[in-house]
Image (tube, rainbow, N blue to C red):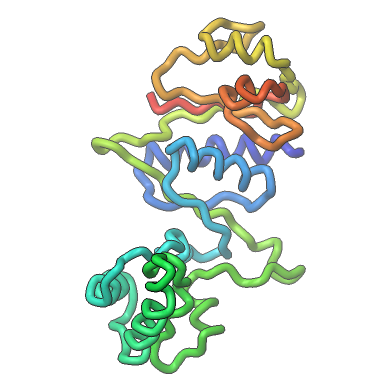
Length: 229
């Protein structure tokens, strides 16, 4: 596991939030992808998507296309894309008729179902941000695109600091992690004292928030600390 990429990602996400960016990207690695999904579950970021060098379409960041009516679906589509063709509207109607019996609405529809005039489904998949197959030719250009969150014009992810470093990795067991969750300092690591503050740990069960580690009774290496204040 390379902590150099993690250190760069922490600094980049912190600076991007302070700069009020809505969307940013970091290198695509398994560790960073797993950590970003943890941040999304904790509510620090809004979206996480794997893409290329160019920003993905909004439909790729939000794959659950959930409007339940044809008019609202067409309206939502035309806000970020060209006007829907008759074929696209017909596709929506057919898909809705197929899934309405199961009570799923349009939530199971992929953005690639909305094929614009003069383009094939394959071209629409590549152009509208759905994830293409990763090959040896494009794996080096993969990026993790992250949607940042704000509340009352303030960033939700304000500070993100690395704990373990490439030259000094910090491992703790369950008793030490429990002390940190109670706000006590262990060594030079300060406990969680701020409202909404989180700490993430890599374990043999994946990357978990420190409270999940205590709940599951697993220890590991401390990765980073995230604070909204």
